[in-house]
Length: 336
View 1 (tube, rainbow, N blue to C red):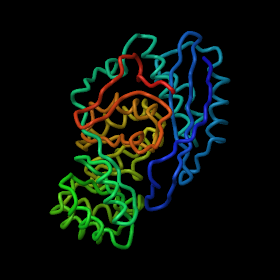
View 2 (cartoon, rainbow, N blue to C red):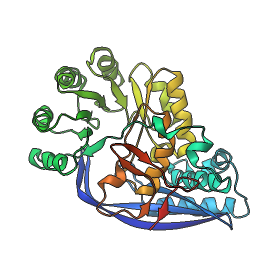
View 3 (spheres, rainbow, N blue to C red):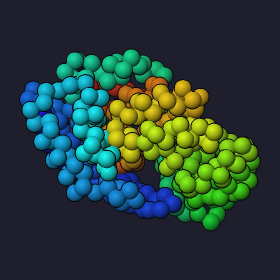
């Protein structure tokens, strides 16, 4: 198999701000995995917070190429195990390769990915649409521009509750709150009471990931469910989140791809936790892959391509009515 690396720029409709960074353009890396007859596509975006660059992803993928050069296409979990030592410090690059492997493998079998996994698209939960941190006026403008029944509100300011109260005046949509580690346990518990009255469904990662004692308090006394994000990066983290969070948000890029992501989802279900998969502002390449595994989830955040001013690919189409899959095997994603 041959790995081809493509780097693309994803311009955003609006400046996207969360608690620790802002951006107007997202750099993304596409892997095109060839077996001589067909190809599969995978994607991972760069991320300065996690130290992920085009250069270090490329270096890992070039090393993986040496292992795969004479290998035929095989079941992606086998490929993942064969190359995992290369990606110990770079799960983002591993994700792009693993996603491409799943796309290619199911294409060679003439199956859509969700069909191969035994899933049905009718059970996909509605994605939220993310409203990044901005002035309240700008956040309201974004909601008016894109009317949607479910919003994720990014917080982490000195006036978070004022933001939520004001946004609530302008829509009846359900809110999800993502504080990106910005609160204390006392704040999270106190805020949860009013947030519940403001029709907030859950709070995502309210505390810093190492504040375990604080999370015990929040888990015990919050009026809302709490979902782990930064506290649940890799497979070993799932069990650690039991008793601290009501659910987990799996990011395929951080976990290392679809292969470990599927295992994390099943482990969380076994432990009685809710499951969610989130995105990292990917194009329709990455979002299409998420959509195929979404039927097994309680919640999903796959609005990445919806936040772009211009997509670089076609794939699944997301609307209020659900997810429409292209009539193509694999993930169905194609570069434009």
